[in-house]
Length: 275
Ligand code: SAM
Picture 1 (cartoon, helix red, strand yellow):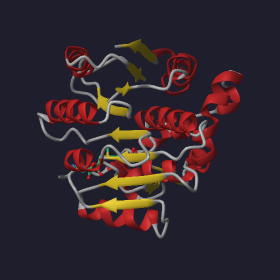
Picture 2: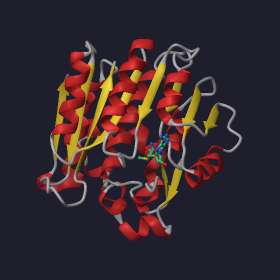
Picture 3: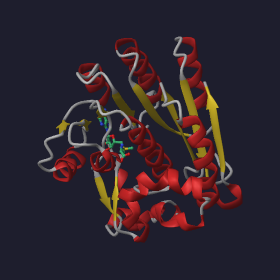
């Protein structure tokens, strides 16, 4: 396990993923009943953009650092507001909230959060970022094992974020198998899966596996900031959301083009598609 998200924190893919994560949490908060968030590959929790790793790649400058909410259409700016309420200071190179810090900031006192992480250094930083917050548990466990063990949650409502590093060649197959098993066990849960786009096949294979397994209600979102270059840096990523909030498709159709314009200029592009 060599992957360290500190090099990529706040990049275009994080902005896309976390802006949508904040929309889903915002939706869950519409009902007073508590929910649970399970983050299977949680990372370090939060990232200092002035630290060596983030400074070396400078990826955040093309992500959170390139966002200018004032220049966005009002409707897109409003949809981005929950995310920016937590991430705004990172626009100038401050502390960037990873999925755990974002979820903790947006969740309510009755909601519960469960974070799985395996890398010892990331785990130690995650424990420090969560601190004594009694709503959250940090568990040193393989994310897919944790997913199987911890669903369905007692709240019976909530979100699973699956955001692995894609370091191993069969990650997508493992992820798909774990997702289908989880969905068979907890059909009502919202599942949000992130994937990198190096070629078109990853997202299409995942979508085809879900359709073949009879997962009827899913949304595929993609955002790219430049034309694909096979051996170049990552310029596109996707999210599949199973059981998406009914408002999410329309929200993404408004928000993602505005994000793509700011992060990719004329080369930015999006996909918003039901599976
Ligand atoms: N979800 C985080 C966020 O949005 O801020 C980023 C997570 S990062 C892309 C992936 C993380 O998964 C890394 O911190 C890595 O150490 C961890 N990881 C790798 N293999 C794992 C496994 N089998 N189970 C749990 N975590 C794992």
